Length: 299
Image 1 (cartoon, helix red, strand yellow):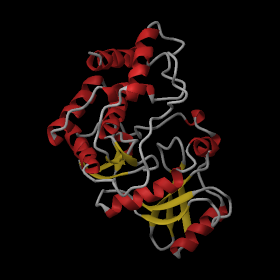
Image 2 (image 1 turned 60 degrees about the vertical axis):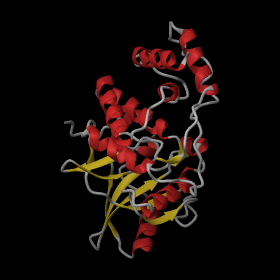
Image 3 (image 1 turned 30 degrees about the vertical axis):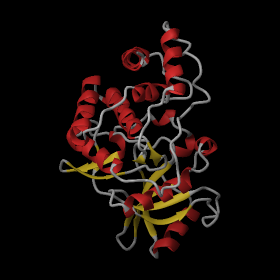
């Protein structure tokens, strides 16, 4: 079992805004105003790759998590993300999904005064585990997907649909990619929408003594198809461990829920990993997934 965070990246690969170990004084002042207690310690938390996430300890003994949308690149692509995450956290807690509770929010940075959206949340116990108990991981996903999201105001949409329109330059199998992209655009299966996390994977599930304590990072949550959550988690399990592990997770989810996973979502997961497509190192694994899924979808 690894002791590092499953999402841990070389800091040099992160935007400079996400590397800073602390937060500006005006953010500390906002936390103090919001909680009634001074900040005595700030520590950067591992695993974040799109926002700055810090733990803050207060003079009165309180401990919280501060999530700041400091990287302009993320907000340029997803300007609604801070408001969506606020609403998703409130929705999740209201429906008894284990998630952080919002203590304070400034979704446009006007109250803080720096123009950077920020959420202050309760600190959940536990830590992320690269390959947890797969049945229990499937149970966490199923619990989220059991929630009807008819009254949640954010809808699913494919990631990178406008940029992923050609085979990767490094592939020797362009016809496979073109067929996969055709299926992705034109053959989305019918689904009954539910609440989905949209970035569900081991790095966003916390554990203590073998039990899940909660799910974090709700910036992409929406009303949509459960299959995309399972596919995204499978992608991460393949990267963190193996395809066999991803298959066991899927088998556990199908057994728990009685649902049948559509191979379309394997195609979507591969094509939605990055706006520029897979890197050369990941190409063989991705093409094997595409080959199997395309064969399963195509009559």
